[in-house]
Amino acid sequence: MFKLLLFSFVILLSSCNELDNILGNDDDDPINAESWVFVANEGNFGSANGTISMISDNGAVLTTDIIGETVQSIEVYNDKLIVLINGDSKMKIFDITSEGLSMPGIEIDLGGSDPRFMAVVDNEGVENDKIYITNWNSEDIKVFNLYTYVVENSISVNGKPEGIVEKDGSLWVALVNNSDWSAGTSVNKYDIATQTLVSTYDVGEGPSSFEFLGDDIYVSRTFYNQDYTAINHGIAKISGLGDIPVIQNYGNGVPCAGSVVNVNNQIYRTLPNNPDTETLGGIAAVNEDLSHDLNRMIGSYEQSNVYHVEVVDNEIWFAVTDYQGLNEVKVVSFDGVELASYDVGVSPRDFVKWNISD
Image (cartoon, rainbow, N blue to C red):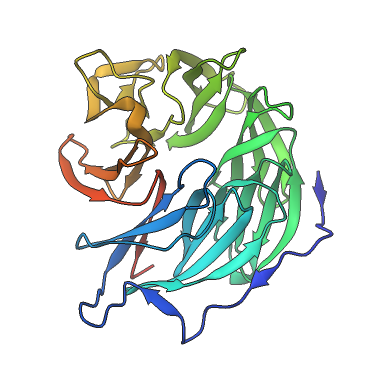
């Protein structure tokens, strides 16, 4: 169901001019990077201290001043960094150059919608490029036009949408919770051209994020038990339009985690806990029955500190945090060798890379 939004979204155009400050532009030691990896630093829970860290191709690390409460997710579109800030229900857009970020950026008020994640869809013709944003409070997917900078549509959903990805002209959306905050069980597939619901899949409780392997879609799941005393972990696989998803539950585990990634055409998922008292955690390969293969693990980190994992240009990036003083990014090769470690802002939780040729 769609509706035109009847309220306006405020765009603060106080940046994007030649007077902007470039984060990273130090006259005494200028940075001219060929690429940047941006890190969304959520900040402390309930505190307005979210930031963005940026890591250059030569290992320089810069972190912005505070930009809002709970920096949720980030994406790159051409030479722009797009940031969703959950606690303030706003989106910020920054220009990117080889020297850094153009500050303070453009700010778009999302009207208390509680934004979570987004998919950037680059359609034919720049006027058709969109961002699709999942929102908990408004229980919808907002359609933001990257040409007009207007939220032009809202796709209503029955529950709290979380992860969202685009593939082959379709949007896949995970409904992590129902409207009453009980665990959701659905993944919705939408046709982008018509913005209509095509299919719904029951994948088990707590679907949150996606990864693709060929035509198969793997869905990471995390959810509370009925008395909210423990977090449960699981995964599901959708293999075809007519097939019933395969579901695997892993049991209780650490909170605030559950990444699923494609490592050299093999699906890996974060572990629910350290494998045993003597072995640290990380990610482990997923077998055909969706169980973890502990003989094929990558990473060696306290599992409760592994907040997010993502593959960036054939390297595995781990966000490692205790949500207070420990805030690190670990870069690991596909064969398990730690290549780099960076100190970043509080509670790192998302990555995206920009290349100068983008």
